[in-house]
Length: 374
Image 1 (cartoon, helix red, strand yellow):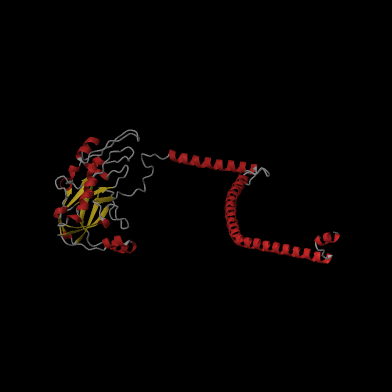
Image 2 (cartoon, rainbow, N blue to C red):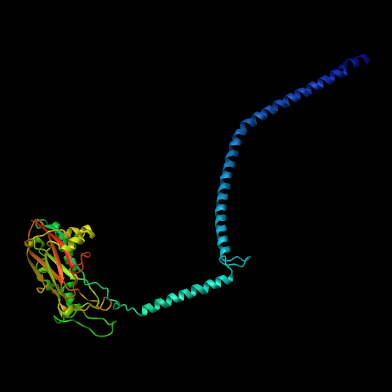
């Protein structure tokens, strides 16, 4: 019986053999663990690149955000620093200084500039007490009256072709626009009918409104544009209007009205020839131009006296002489040589009138050219 029981027992192994089996199990377990670790590492290798890319993108976004924040902070800091510097310049509480100056210096500056402003104000006030807006105080250096002509022409050259209205239509438009203020109905409404041949002197305070004498458009007759709407340009007999510039208080001397005289510009005088070298090319061309007296055979003047009547003088200034209308003299060139340039000089004639100033082409005279083509 005991022998049977012994035979059924597990076989006995030596102690060293069991130890070797245990080591083999550990080796197998380690091998399996290594395989698992390798699989995990492979999975990590597959995932890490994607994670790295995401991390890099996040880092770039964070950097951009930080840069924007830093720029905004730098900008705000820069403005804040500038404001702080200005604030300290205006008032420094530590040094108790304003504008980088102590209080005593500021007081001195204040009184200095205040006294300087007071002196300037007093001088200006005293000066304005001696000046009136209605009449010039000093008129000794006022030049004799200058003249101007209408219609407007570039370089004072009237060039047109009778058979081509486009070449002279702008002259007609210019004259019509200029004469609108001289319409008879408007003159009768605004101004008074004064007796001719005498000054229209108006007494009273200088700030009182002054009346003005009528100068009607109809006074110009054939050059009024009422009878001939083309002012003679359609027939090669152009009208040109001349007026004197306004001078406050001006009166023709000796009670004689200033007259207008036009003629062909002939050979210049010796004095004019000597002065040519000091003139501009514009003046030189006109002074050196030679014309024939027979180039203009007939000129009609309107008014017929070819003068500026005394009733339009003196002029009291634009503040009080509001409706004043400058008198005109119209020159109607009825017979002028055609198809060539004709130099014309129109001068003012009268006592005290200067019309031979070489270096001023509009004092007492005006020079222009007519070139009428057919």
